[in-house]
Amino acid sequence: MRAFLRTESGSALVLLGAAVAALLWVNIDQSSYDDLWQTVLSVRLGDWAVSLDLRGWVNDGLMAFFFFVVGLEARREAELGELRELRRVALPLLAGLGGMLVPIALFLAFNGGRPTAQGWGAAMSTDTAFALGVLVLVGPKFSDRLRAFMLTVVVVDDIVALLVIAFAYSEQIDGKALLVAAGLLVVVLVVRALHVQRGLPYAVLGIAMWLAMVDSGVDPLVVGLVMGLLAYAYPAARVDLERATQQFRLFREQPTPELARRARAGVEAAISPNERLSQLWHPWSSYVIVPVFALANAGIPLSAHFLGHAFTSPVTLGILVGYVVGKPVGITVTSMLVTAVSRGRLRPPVGWGSVGGAGAAAGVGFTVSLLIASLAFDRGRLAEAKAGVLAAAVAAALLSWAVFRVIDALPAKTKAKALLGMSATIVDLADPVDVERDHIRGPVESLVTVVEYGDLECPYCGQAEPVVRELLRDFTDITYVWRHLPLDDVHPHARMAAEATEAADAQGAFWPMHDLLFEHQDALRFADLVGYADELGLDTERFADDLRRRAFAARVASDVDSADLSGVSGTPTFFVNGRRHQGAFDLETLSAAVKAAGARAALTS
Image: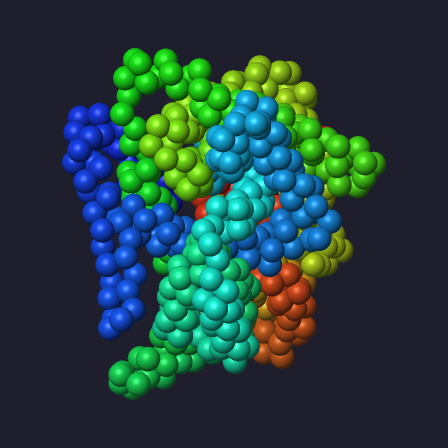
Protein backbone atom coordinates (compact mmCIF):
# COMPACT_ATOMS: atom_id res chain seq x y z
CA MET A 1 0.00 0.00 0.00
CA ARG A 2 2.85 2.40 0.83
CA ALA A 3 4.48 1.68 -2.54
CA PHE A 4 1.18 2.37 -4.30
CA LEU A 5 0.66 5.64 -2.46
CA ARG A 6 4.12 6.88 -3.49
CA THR A 7 3.24 6.75 -7.18
CA GLU A 8 1.64 9.41 -9.36
CA SER A 9 -0.58 6.74 -10.89
CA GLY A 10 -1.83 5.93 -7.38
CA SER A 11 -3.00 9.50 -6.70
CA ALA A 12 -4.56 9.69 -10.19
CA LEU A 13 -6.52 6.49 -9.58
CA VAL A 14 -7.79 7.76 -6.21
CA LEU A 15 -8.87 10.99 -7.87
CA LEU A 16 -10.58 9.04 -10.64
CA GLY A 17 -12.37 6.91 -8.03
CA ALA A 18 -13.66 10.04 -6.27
CA ALA A 19 -14.98 11.45 -9.57
CA VAL A 20 -16.76 8.19 -10.39
CA ALA A 21 -18.19 8.10 -6.86
CA ALA A 22 -19.58 11.62 -7.32
CA LEU A 23 -21.21 10.65 -10.61
CA LEU A 24 -22.76 7.53 -9.10
CA TRP A 25 -23.96 9.39 -6.01
CA VAL A 26 -25.64 12.26 -7.86
CA ASN A 27 -27.33 9.88 -10.30
CA ILE A 28 -28.60 7.61 -7.52
CA ASP A 29 -29.78 10.30 -5.12
CA GLN A 30 -29.27 13.84 -6.35
CA SER A 31 -31.11 15.46 -3.46
CA SER A 32 -28.77 14.01 -0.80
CA TYR A 33 -25.72 15.02 -2.87
CA ASP A 34 -26.95 18.61 -3.27
CA ASP A 35 -28.15 18.87 0.34
CA LEU A 36 -24.77 17.84 1.74
CA TRP A 37 -22.60 20.17 -0.31
CA GLN A 38 -25.02 23.11 0.07
CA THR A 39 -25.02 22.81 3.86
CA VAL A 40 -23.83 26.11 5.32
CA LEU A 41 -21.00 26.04 7.86
CA SER A 42 -20.24 29.24 9.77
CA VAL A 43 -17.31 30.15 11.99
CA ARG A 44 -18.09 33.09 14.29
CA LEU A 45 -15.93 35.07 16.72
CA GLY A 46 -17.85 37.96 18.28
CA ASP A 47 -19.17 40.16 15.48
CA TRP A 48 -16.86 38.61 12.92
CA ALA A 49 -17.93 35.53 10.96
CA VAL A 50 -17.11 33.49 7.87
CA SER A 51 -20.05 31.63 6.37
CA LEU A 52 -19.69 29.27 3.38
CA ASP A 53 -21.44 26.14 2.22
CA LEU A 54 -19.44 22.91 2.38
CA ARG A 55 -18.56 23.11 -1.30
CA GLY A 56 -17.25 26.63 -0.71
CA TRP A 57 -15.09 25.45 2.21
CA VAL A 58 -13.67 22.75 -0.04
CA ASN A 59 -13.14 24.97 -3.08
CA ASP A 60 -11.77 28.04 -1.27
CA GLY A 61 -10.36 26.45 1.88
CA LEU A 62 -9.03 22.94 1.31
CA MET A 63 -7.88 23.78 -2.21
CA ALA A 64 -5.60 26.45 -0.76
CA PHE A 65 -3.52 23.52 0.54
CA PHE A 66 -3.47 22.04 -2.97
CA PHE A 67 -1.97 25.26 -4.31
CA PHE A 68 0.37 25.36 -1.32
CA VAL A 69 1.79 22.01 -2.51
CA VAL A 70 2.00 23.40 -6.07
CA GLY A 71 4.01 26.33 -4.71
CA LEU A 72 6.34 23.96 -2.84
CA GLU A 73 6.95 21.96 -6.01
CA ALA A 74 7.60 25.11 -8.06
CA ARG A 75 10.11 26.39 -5.49
CA ARG A 76 11.86 23.01 -5.35
CA GLU A 77 12.17 22.89 -9.16
CA ALA A 78 13.55 26.45 -9.15
CA GLU A 79 16.17 25.62 -6.51
CA LEU A 80 17.09 22.01 -7.27
CA GLY A 81 15.41 20.85 -10.49
CA GLU A 82 15.26 21.71 -14.17
CA LEU A 83 14.29 25.34 -13.46
CA ARG A 84 17.53 26.16 -11.64
CA GLU A 85 19.17 27.06 -14.97
CA LEU A 86 17.50 30.19 -16.29
CA ARG A 87 17.85 29.23 -19.97
CA ARG A 88 15.92 26.02 -19.30
CA VAL A 89 12.96 27.93 -17.86
CA ALA A 90 12.03 29.90 -20.98
CA LEU A 91 10.83 27.06 -23.20
CA PRO A 92 8.57 25.19 -20.75
CA LEU A 93 7.27 28.53 -19.46
CA LEU A 94 6.30 29.63 -22.96
CA ALA A 95 5.02 26.13 -23.78
CA GLY A 96 2.80 26.31 -20.70
CA LEU A 97 1.43 29.69 -21.79
CA GLY A 98 0.90 28.45 -25.35
CA GLY A 99 -0.88 25.42 -23.95
CA MET A 100 -3.31 27.79 -22.23
CA LEU A 101 -3.84 30.42 -24.93
CA VAL A 102 -4.70 28.01 -27.75
CA PRO A 103 -7.44 26.22 -25.73
CA ILE A 104 -8.87 29.62 -24.72
CA ALA A 105 -8.94 30.68 -28.37
CA LEU A 106 -10.72 27.46 -29.36
CA PHE A 107 -13.25 27.87 -26.54
CA LEU A 108 -13.98 31.43 -27.66
CA ALA A 109 -14.35 30.20 -31.25
CA PHE A 110 -17.37 28.22 -30.03
CA ASN A 111 -18.63 30.80 -27.53
CA GLY A 112 -17.59 34.21 -28.89
CA GLY A 113 -20.38 36.76 -28.69
CA ARG A 114 -22.37 34.58 -26.27
CA PRO A 115 -22.84 35.08 -22.53
CA THR A 116 -21.00 31.77 -22.03
CA ALA A 117 -17.76 33.37 -23.28
CA GLN A 118 -17.10 34.40 -19.66
CA GLY A 119 -16.24 30.76 -18.96
CA TRP A 120 -13.05 30.82 -21.08
CA GLY A 121 -10.95 30.02 -18.00
CA ALA A 122 -12.54 26.58 -17.68
CA ALA A 123 -10.78 25.41 -20.85
CA MET A 124 -7.17 26.27 -20.04
CA SER A 125 -5.76 24.52 -16.97
CA THR A 126 -4.19 21.06 -16.72
CA ASP A 127 -4.83 18.82 -13.72
CA THR A 128 -1.35 18.13 -12.33
CA ALA A 129 -2.14 14.87 -10.55
CA PHE A 130 -4.19 13.41 -13.40
CA ALA A 131 -1.74 14.46 -16.14
CA LEU A 132 1.34 13.09 -14.34
CA GLY A 133 -0.60 9.93 -13.52
CA VAL A 134 -1.45 9.48 -17.20
CA LEU A 135 2.23 9.87 -18.11
CA VAL A 136 3.22 7.23 -15.55
CA LEU A 137 0.64 4.81 -16.96
CA VAL A 138 1.12 5.34 -20.71
CA GLY A 139 4.48 7.08 -21.09
CA PRO A 140 8.01 5.62 -21.34
CA LYS A 141 9.46 3.95 -18.26
CA PHE A 142 12.57 6.14 -18.19
CA SER A 143 10.53 9.34 -17.97
CA ASP A 144 12.40 11.46 -15.39
CA ARG A 145 13.18 14.26 -17.84
CA LEU A 146 9.74 13.98 -19.40
CA ARG A 147 8.17 14.26 -15.95
CA ALA A 148 10.39 17.29 -15.18
CA PHE A 149 9.32 18.98 -18.45
CA MET A 150 5.67 18.18 -17.80
CA LEU A 151 5.90 19.35 -14.20
CA THR A 152 7.41 22.67 -15.28
CA VAL A 153 4.65 23.20 -17.83
CA VAL A 154 1.84 22.41 -15.38
CA VAL A 155 3.38 24.51 -12.59
CA VAL A 156 3.29 27.51 -14.97
CA ASP A 157 -0.23 26.43 -15.86
CA ASP A 158 -1.32 26.30 -12.21
CA ILE A 159 0.23 29.66 -11.32
CA VAL A 160 -1.39 31.44 -14.27
CA ALA A 161 -4.71 29.71 -13.59
CA LEU A 162 -4.62 30.86 -9.99
CA LEU A 163 -3.97 34.44 -11.06
CA VAL A 164 -6.90 34.16 -13.47
CA ILE A 165 -9.12 32.89 -10.64
CA ALA A 166 -7.93 35.63 -8.30
CA PHE A 167 -8.50 38.54 -10.67
CA ALA A 168 -10.82 37.47 -13.51
CA TYR A 169 -13.30 35.52 -11.42
CA SER A 170 -13.28 37.47 -8.17
CA GLU A 171 -16.23 39.41 -6.87
CA GLN A 172 -16.25 43.11 -5.94
CA ILE A 173 -12.89 43.84 -4.35
CA ASP A 174 -12.60 45.35 -0.85
CA GLY A 175 -9.43 47.46 -0.85
CA LYS A 176 -9.08 47.61 2.96
CA ALA A 177 -9.17 43.82 3.34
CA LEU A 178 -6.67 43.49 0.50
CA LEU A 179 -4.32 45.91 2.26
CA VAL A 180 -4.62 43.87 5.45
CA ALA A 181 -3.66 40.76 3.51
CA ALA A 182 -0.68 42.59 1.98
CA GLY A 183 0.41 43.77 5.44
CA LEU A 184 0.24 40.20 6.76
CA LEU A 185 2.38 39.07 3.83
CA VAL A 186 5.00 41.64 4.83
CA VAL A 187 4.96 40.19 8.36
CA VAL A 188 5.46 36.70 6.90
CA LEU A 189 8.47 37.94 4.94
CA VAL A 190 9.95 39.53 8.08
CA VAL A 191 9.46 36.31 10.07
CA ARG A 192 11.09 34.36 7.24
CA ALA A 193 14.02 36.82 7.12
CA LEU A 194 14.56 36.18 10.84
CA HIS A 195 14.96 32.45 10.00
CA VAL A 196 12.07 31.36 12.20
CA GLN A 197 11.85 27.57 11.75
CA ARG A 198 8.69 26.72 13.67
CA GLY A 199 5.58 26.25 11.59
CA LEU A 200 3.05 27.76 14.03
CA PRO A 201 3.77 31.46 13.25
CA TYR A 202 3.48 30.79 9.52
CA ALA A 203 0.28 28.78 10.00
CA VAL A 204 -1.34 31.57 12.06
CA LEU A 205 -0.27 34.28 9.59
CA GLY A 206 -1.37 32.14 6.62
CA ILE A 207 -4.84 31.61 8.10
CA ALA A 208 -5.13 35.33 8.85
CA MET A 209 -4.13 36.14 5.24
CA TRP A 210 -6.70 33.65 3.95
CA LEU A 211 -9.46 35.25 6.02
CA ALA A 212 -8.45 38.72 4.82
CA MET A 213 -8.55 37.52 1.20
CA VAL A 214 -12.02 36.01 1.74
CA ASP A 215 -13.22 39.43 2.92
CA SER A 216 -11.40 41.20 0.06
CA GLY A 217 -13.38 39.45 -2.66
CA VAL A 218 -10.16 38.13 -4.31
CA ASP A 219 -10.09 34.34 -4.42
CA PRO A 220 -8.14 33.25 -1.30
CA LEU A 221 -6.44 30.31 -3.06
CA VAL A 222 -3.57 32.64 -3.95
CA VAL A 223 -2.49 32.53 -0.28
CA GLY A 224 -1.64 28.84 -0.54
CA LEU A 225 0.54 29.37 -3.61
CA VAL A 226 2.41 32.33 -2.09
CA MET A 227 3.15 30.46 1.15
CA GLY A 228 4.43 27.46 -0.82
CA LEU A 229 6.72 29.61 -2.96
CA LEU A 230 8.28 31.10 0.17
CA ALA A 231 9.48 27.73 1.56
CA TYR A 232 13.25 27.34 1.09
CA ALA A 233 14.49 24.25 -0.78
CA TYR A 234 18.11 23.10 -0.46
CA PRO A 235 20.04 19.82 -0.17
CA ALA A 236 21.05 18.65 3.29
CA ALA A 237 24.48 20.08 4.13
CA ARG A 238 27.09 17.78 5.67
CA VAL A 239 27.78 20.26 8.48
CA ASP A 240 24.09 20.26 9.44
CA LEU A 241 23.98 16.46 9.39
CA GLU A 242 27.07 16.28 11.61
CA ARG A 243 25.49 18.77 14.01
CA ALA A 244 22.34 16.63 14.15
CA THR A 245 24.47 13.55 14.91
CA GLN A 246 26.17 15.38 17.76
CA GLN A 247 22.81 16.43 19.21
CA PHE A 248 21.61 12.82 19.10
CA ARG A 249 24.77 11.59 20.80
CA LEU A 250 24.21 14.06 23.62
CA PHE A 251 20.66 12.73 23.98
CA ARG A 252 21.96 9.13 23.94
CA GLU A 253 24.27 9.95 26.85
CA GLN A 254 21.67 11.98 28.76
CA PRO A 255 18.13 11.04 27.60
CA THR A 256 16.37 14.12 28.95
CA PRO A 257 13.33 15.87 27.44
CA GLU A 258 15.40 18.98 26.70
CA LEU A 259 18.08 17.05 24.82
CA ALA A 260 15.37 15.09 23.00
CA ARG A 261 13.88 18.38 21.83
CA ARG A 262 17.30 19.61 20.68
CA ALA A 263 18.00 16.35 18.85
CA ARG A 264 14.64 16.51 17.08
CA ALA A 265 15.18 20.17 16.16
CA GLY A 266 18.69 19.39 14.89
CA VAL A 267 17.44 16.61 12.63
CA GLU A 268 14.62 18.78 11.28
CA ALA A 269 16.95 21.72 10.66
CA ALA A 270 19.17 19.54 8.44
CA ILE A 271 16.27 19.06 6.00
CA SER A 272 14.93 22.05 4.08
CA PRO A 273 11.50 23.42 5.06
CA ASN A 274 10.34 22.66 1.53
CA GLU A 275 11.09 18.94 1.87
CA ARG A 276 9.55 18.70 5.33
CA LEU A 277 6.37 20.45 4.24
CA SER A 278 6.14 18.45 1.01
CA GLN A 279 6.41 15.19 2.91
CA LEU A 280 3.68 16.35 5.28
CA TRP A 281 1.21 17.88 2.82
CA HIS A 282 1.72 16.11 -0.50
CA PRO A 283 -0.07 12.90 0.62
CA TRP A 284 -2.92 14.92 2.15
CA SER A 285 -3.26 16.95 -1.05
CA SER A 286 -3.13 13.94 -3.38
CA TYR A 287 -5.19 11.45 -1.39
CA VAL A 288 -7.61 13.58 0.62
CA ILE A 289 -7.98 17.19 -0.51
CA VAL A 290 -8.14 16.76 -4.30
CA PRO A 291 -10.37 13.63 -4.12
CA VAL A 292 -12.75 15.47 -1.75
CA PHE A 293 -12.79 18.34 -4.23
CA ALA A 294 -13.67 15.87 -7.01
CA LEU A 295 -16.40 14.35 -4.86
CA ALA A 296 -17.87 17.81 -4.23
CA ASN A 297 -17.69 19.08 -7.80
CA ALA A 298 -17.74 16.21 -10.32
CA GLY A 299 -21.32 15.15 -9.69
CA ILE A 300 -23.60 15.81 -12.67
CA PRO A 301 -26.91 14.04 -13.33
CA LEU A 302 -26.59 12.08 -16.56
CA SER A 303 -29.39 11.21 -18.92
CA ALA A 304 -29.72 10.61 -22.65
CA HIS A 305 -31.48 13.96 -23.03
CA PHE A 306 -28.79 15.82 -21.07
CA LEU A 307 -25.92 14.18 -22.96
CA GLY A 308 -27.54 14.87 -26.30
CA HIS A 309 -27.99 18.50 -25.36
CA ALA A 310 -24.56 18.88 -23.76
CA PHE A 311 -22.61 17.62 -26.75
CA THR A 312 -24.29 20.16 -28.99
CA SER A 313 -23.68 22.93 -26.43
CA PRO A 314 -20.93 25.45 -27.24
CA VAL A 315 -19.78 25.25 -23.60
CA THR A 316 -19.22 21.49 -23.68
CA LEU A 317 -17.73 21.51 -27.17
CA GLY A 318 -15.50 24.52 -26.42
CA ILE A 319 -14.02 22.82 -23.36
CA LEU A 320 -13.69 19.43 -25.06
CA VAL A 321 -11.99 20.75 -28.20
CA GLY A 322 -9.93 23.24 -26.19
CA TYR A 323 -8.40 20.49 -24.10
CA VAL A 324 -8.13 17.60 -26.54
CA VAL A 325 -6.93 19.68 -29.51
CA GLY A 326 -5.74 22.96 -28.02
CA LYS A 327 -3.47 21.62 -25.29
CA PRO A 328 -1.25 19.34 -27.41
CA VAL A 329 -1.20 21.82 -30.31
CA GLY A 330 -0.43 24.78 -28.04
CA ILE A 331 2.38 23.04 -26.12
CA THR A 332 3.98 21.34 -29.13
CA VAL A 333 3.77 24.23 -31.60
CA THR A 334 4.99 26.77 -29.03
CA SER A 335 7.95 24.52 -28.17
CA MET A 336 8.80 24.20 -31.87
CA LEU A 337 8.57 27.95 -32.41
CA VAL A 338 10.82 28.70 -29.42
CA THR A 339 13.36 26.14 -30.63
CA ALA A 340 13.31 27.58 -34.16
CA VAL A 341 13.52 31.23 -33.05
CA SER A 342 16.40 30.47 -30.67
CA ARG A 343 18.13 28.44 -33.41
CA GLY A 344 18.23 25.39 -31.20
CA ARG A 345 19.73 27.09 -28.13
CA LEU A 346 16.44 26.52 -26.35
CA ARG A 347 14.91 23.10 -26.85
CA PRO A 348 12.83 20.66 -24.81
CA PRO A 349 14.75 18.25 -22.54
CA VAL A 350 12.99 15.38 -24.37
CA GLY A 351 12.18 14.44 -27.97
CA TRP A 352 9.31 15.81 -29.99
CA GLY A 353 7.34 12.60 -29.63
CA SER A 354 7.50 12.96 -25.86
CA VAL A 355 6.46 16.61 -26.14
CA GLY A 356 3.42 15.59 -28.19
CA GLY A 357 2.50 12.77 -25.80
CA ALA A 358 2.91 15.06 -22.79
CA GLY A 359 0.88 17.77 -24.55
CA ALA A 360 -1.93 15.27 -25.08
CA ALA A 361 -1.78 14.23 -21.40
CA ALA A 362 -1.95 17.92 -20.46
CA GLY A 363 -5.44 17.90 -21.97
CA VAL A 364 -6.62 16.22 -18.78
CA GLY A 365 -8.11 19.28 -17.14
CA PHE A 366 -10.05 18.46 -14.01
CA THR A 367 -9.40 20.11 -10.67
CA VAL A 368 -8.80 23.76 -11.60
CA SER A 369 -11.11 23.51 -14.62
CA LEU A 370 -14.02 22.42 -12.43
CA LEU A 371 -13.08 25.14 -9.94
CA ILE A 372 -13.25 27.88 -12.59
CA ALA A 373 -16.41 26.41 -14.10
CA SER A 374 -18.10 26.63 -10.70
CA LEU A 375 -17.17 30.33 -10.57
CA ALA A 376 -18.19 31.13 -14.15
CA PHE A 377 -21.42 29.17 -14.60
CA ASP A 378 -24.62 28.29 -12.77
CA ARG A 379 -26.80 25.18 -12.85
CA GLY A 380 -27.40 24.02 -16.45
CA ARG A 381 -24.33 25.69 -17.95
CA LEU A 382 -22.23 24.36 -15.07
CA ALA A 383 -23.42 20.82 -15.77
CA GLU A 384 -22.52 21.26 -19.45
CA ALA A 385 -19.07 22.51 -18.48
CA LYS A 386 -18.55 19.53 -16.17
CA ALA A 387 -19.55 17.17 -18.98
CA GLY A 388 -16.94 18.79 -21.22
CA VAL A 389 -14.25 18.53 -18.55
CA LEU A 390 -14.95 14.84 -17.87
CA ALA A 391 -15.15 13.93 -21.57
CA ALA A 392 -11.92 15.81 -22.27
CA ALA A 393 -10.13 13.94 -19.47
CA VAL A 394 -11.04 10.58 -20.99
CA ALA A 395 -10.27 11.64 -24.58
CA ALA A 396 -6.94 13.27 -23.67
CA ALA A 397 -5.76 10.19 -21.76
CA LEU A 398 -6.63 7.98 -24.74
CA LEU A 399 -4.88 10.38 -27.13
CA SER A 400 -1.71 10.37 -25.01
CA TRP A 401 -1.78 6.56 -24.94
CA ALA A 402 -2.15 6.47 -28.74
CA VAL A 403 0.78 8.85 -29.28
CA PHE A 404 3.15 6.75 -27.17
CA ARG A 405 1.95 3.49 -28.77
CA VAL A 406 2.72 4.92 -32.21
CA ILE A 407 6.20 5.91 -31.00
CA ASP A 408 6.73 2.40 -29.60
CA ALA A 409 6.15 0.98 -33.09
CA LEU A 410 9.00 3.04 -34.62
CA PRO A 411 12.48 1.61 -35.33
CA ALA A 412 14.74 1.65 -32.24
CA LYS A 413 16.91 4.64 -33.18
CA THR A 414 13.96 6.72 -34.41
CA LYS A 415 12.01 5.82 -31.28
CA ALA A 416 14.89 6.86 -29.01
CA LYS A 417 15.21 10.20 -30.82
CA ALA A 418 11.45 10.81 -30.61
CA LEU A 419 11.40 10.09 -26.88
CA LEU A 420 14.72 11.50 -25.70
CA GLY A 421 15.64 14.29 -28.08
CA MET A 422 19.05 15.90 -28.55
CA SER A 423 19.26 18.41 -25.71
CA ALA A 424 22.21 18.35 -23.32
CA THR A 425 21.54 17.27 -19.76
CA ILE A 426 22.24 19.31 -16.63
CA VAL A 427 25.56 18.23 -15.09
CA ASP A 428 25.43 17.94 -11.30
CA LEU A 429 28.85 16.33 -10.84
CA ALA A 430 31.18 19.25 -10.18
CA ASP A 431 34.43 17.25 -10.37
CA PRO A 432 34.68 15.36 -13.71
CA VAL A 433 35.97 11.80 -13.82
CA ASP A 434 39.78 11.65 -14.09
CA VAL A 435 41.05 8.31 -15.42
CA GLU A 436 44.49 9.03 -13.91
CA ARG A 437 43.11 9.53 -10.41
CA ASP A 438 39.72 7.85 -10.06
CA HIS A 439 39.15 4.17 -9.33
CA ILE A 440 37.37 2.68 -12.34
CA ARG A 441 35.69 -0.62 -13.10
CA GLY A 442 34.74 -1.48 -16.64
CA PRO A 443 35.95 0.30 -19.77
CA VAL A 444 37.67 3.64 -19.32
CA GLU A 445 35.50 5.19 -22.03
CA SER A 446 31.87 4.28 -22.60
CA LEU A 447 28.53 5.90 -23.32
CA VAL A 448 27.50 5.70 -19.65
CA THR A 449 29.57 6.61 -16.60
CA VAL A 450 28.22 5.85 -13.13
CA VAL A 451 29.95 7.58 -10.22
CA GLU A 452 29.23 6.44 -6.67
CA TYR A 453 30.18 8.34 -3.53
CA GLY A 454 30.29 5.71 -0.82
CA ASP A 455 31.30 4.87 2.72
CA LEU A 456 32.83 1.44 3.36
CA GLU A 457 31.15 1.19 6.77
CA CYS A 458 27.73 2.44 5.60
CA PRO A 459 25.08 -0.32 5.67
CA TYR A 460 23.19 1.31 2.77
CA CYS A 461 26.36 1.20 0.67
CA GLY A 462 26.62 -2.45 1.67
CA GLN A 463 23.09 -2.99 0.32
CA ALA A 464 23.96 -1.13 -2.89
CA GLU A 465 27.18 -3.07 -3.55
CA PRO A 466 25.57 -6.29 -4.90
CA VAL A 467 23.19 -4.13 -6.97
CA VAL A 468 26.20 -2.38 -8.54
CA ARG A 469 27.86 -5.76 -9.23
CA GLU A 470 24.74 -7.04 -10.96
CA LEU A 471 24.40 -3.79 -12.89
CA LEU A 472 27.97 -4.21 -14.18
CA ARG A 473 27.19 -7.79 -15.20
CA ASP A 474 24.05 -6.73 -17.08
CA PHE A 475 25.70 -3.71 -18.76
CA THR A 476 29.25 -4.58 -19.74
CA ASP A 477 29.85 -1.17 -21.37
CA ILE A 478 29.45 0.94 -18.19
CA THR A 479 32.30 2.96 -16.72
CA TYR A 480 31.87 2.65 -12.94
CA VAL A 481 33.74 5.02 -10.62
CA TRP A 482 34.07 4.73 -6.83
CA ARG A 483 34.78 7.84 -4.74
CA HIS A 484 35.23 7.97 -0.99
CA LEU A 485 32.87 9.83 1.33
CA PRO A 486 33.50 8.51 4.86
CA LEU A 487 30.82 9.81 7.24
CA ASP A 488 33.05 10.26 10.28
CA ASP A 489 30.29 11.34 12.63
CA VAL A 490 28.40 8.04 12.30
CA HIS A 491 31.02 5.57 11.03
CA PRO A 492 34.21 5.87 13.12
CA HIS A 493 36.20 3.34 11.07
CA ALA A 494 35.15 4.48 7.60
CA ARG A 495 38.01 6.92 6.96
CA MET A 496 40.69 4.46 7.98
CA ALA A 497 39.01 1.83 5.80
CA ALA A 498 39.06 4.26 2.87
CA GLU A 499 42.75 4.94 3.44
CA ALA A 500 43.31 1.16 3.60
CA THR A 501 41.91 0.77 0.08
CA GLU A 502 44.31 3.47 -1.10
CA ALA A 503 47.20 1.73 0.64
CA ALA A 504 46.15 -1.47 -1.15
CA ASP A 505 45.94 0.50 -4.40
CA ALA A 506 49.62 1.43 -3.97
CA GLN A 507 50.27 -2.30 -4.23
CA GLY A 508 47.85 -2.83 -7.14
CA ALA A 509 44.94 -4.23 -5.11
CA PHE A 510 42.35 -1.47 -4.71
CA TRP A 511 39.32 -3.43 -5.94
CA PRO A 512 40.15 -6.68 -4.10
CA MET A 513 40.50 -4.69 -0.85
CA HIS A 514 37.35 -2.67 -1.63
CA ASP A 515 35.35 -5.86 -2.14
CA LEU A 516 36.78 -7.58 0.92
CA LEU A 517 35.96 -4.65 3.20
CA PHE A 518 32.34 -4.68 2.04
CA GLU A 519 32.20 -8.35 3.01
CA HIS A 520 33.40 -7.43 6.53
CA GLN A 521 31.78 -4.07 7.25
CA ASP A 522 31.48 -4.95 10.95
CA ALA A 523 35.26 -5.52 11.33
CA LEU A 524 37.25 -2.51 10.12
CA ARG A 525 39.71 -1.87 12.94
CA PHE A 526 43.43 -1.51 12.32
CA ALA A 527 44.23 -5.17 13.09
CA ASP A 528 41.38 -6.30 10.85
CA LEU A 529 42.63 -4.21 7.94
CA VAL A 530 46.16 -5.55 8.27
CA GLY A 531 44.72 -9.06 8.36
CA TYR A 532 42.85 -8.43 5.09
CA ALA A 533 46.10 -7.15 3.51
CA ASP A 534 47.78 -10.38 4.53
CA GLU A 535 44.85 -12.38 3.13
CA LEU A 536 45.30 -10.60 -0.22
CA GLY A 537 49.02 -11.35 -0.22
CA LEU A 538 50.13 -7.72 0.16
CA ASP A 539 53.30 -6.48 1.86
CA THR A 540 51.67 -6.15 5.31
CA GLU A 541 54.57 -4.24 6.83
CA ARG A 542 54.41 -1.57 4.14
CA PHE A 543 50.59 -1.57 4.29
CA ALA A 544 50.55 -1.13 8.11
CA ASP A 545 53.15 1.63 7.92
CA ASP A 546 51.08 3.49 5.30
CA LEU A 547 48.03 3.26 7.57
CA ARG A 548 49.88 4.41 10.71
CA ARG A 549 51.34 7.51 9.07
CA ARG A 550 48.14 8.16 7.12
CA ALA A 551 50.00 8.28 3.82
CA PHE A 552 46.79 8.50 1.79
CA ALA A 553 44.72 10.84 3.95
CA ALA A 554 45.03 13.61 1.37
CA ARG A 555 43.80 11.28 -1.40
CA VAL A 556 40.64 10.42 0.57
CA ALA A 557 40.15 14.08 1.55
CA SER A 558 40.23 15.10 -2.13
CA ASP A 559 37.25 12.80 -2.80
CA VAL A 560 35.42 14.30 0.18
CA ASP A 561 36.08 17.81 -1.13
CA SER A 562 34.72 16.84 -4.54
CA ALA A 563 31.59 15.47 -2.84
CA ASP A 564 31.08 18.82 -1.11
CA LEU A 565 31.40 20.64 -4.44
CA SER A 566 28.60 18.48 -5.86
CA GLY A 567 26.36 18.89 -2.80
CA VAL A 568 26.71 15.26 -1.70
CA SER A 569 26.07 14.74 2.01
CA GLY A 570 24.93 11.13 2.31
CA THR A 571 25.87 7.71 1.00
CA PRO A 572 25.44 6.06 -1.36
CA THR A 573 24.95 8.86 -3.88
CA PHE A 574 25.06 8.02 -7.60
CA PHE A 575 25.68 10.19 -10.65
CA VAL A 576 24.76 8.84 -14.09
CA ASN A 577 26.56 10.70 -16.87
CA GLY A 578 27.06 13.60 -14.52
CA ARG A 579 23.39 13.86 -13.48
CA ARG A 580 22.57 13.09 -9.86
CA HIS A 581 20.41 9.99 -9.57
CA GLN A 582 17.34 10.77 -7.49
CA GLY A 583 15.39 8.10 -5.69
CA ALA A 584 15.99 4.42 -5.04
CA PHE A 585 19.16 2.50 -5.88
CA ASP A 586 17.56 -0.89 -6.55
CA LEU A 587 18.56 -2.76 -9.72
CA GLU A 588 15.40 -1.89 -11.67
CA THR A 589 15.66 1.85 -10.97
CA LEU A 590 19.39 2.10 -11.66
CA SER A 591 19.03 -0.01 -14.82
CA ALA A 592 16.31 2.31 -16.14
CA ALA A 593 18.55 5.33 -15.47
CA VAL A 594 21.49 3.67 -17.24
CA LYS A 595 19.36 2.70 -20.25
CA ALA A 596 17.99 6.22 -20.60
CA ALA A 597 21.45 7.79 -20.25
CA GLY A 598 22.91 5.35 -22.78
CA ALA A 599 20.17 5.99 -25.33
CA ARG A 600 20.53 9.75 -24.91
CA ALA A 601 24.33 9.58 -25.19
CA ALA A 602 24.08 7.46 -28.35
CA LEU A 603 21.93 10.14 -29.99
CA THR A 604 24.31 12.99 -29.16
CA SER A 605 27.61 11.16 -29.78
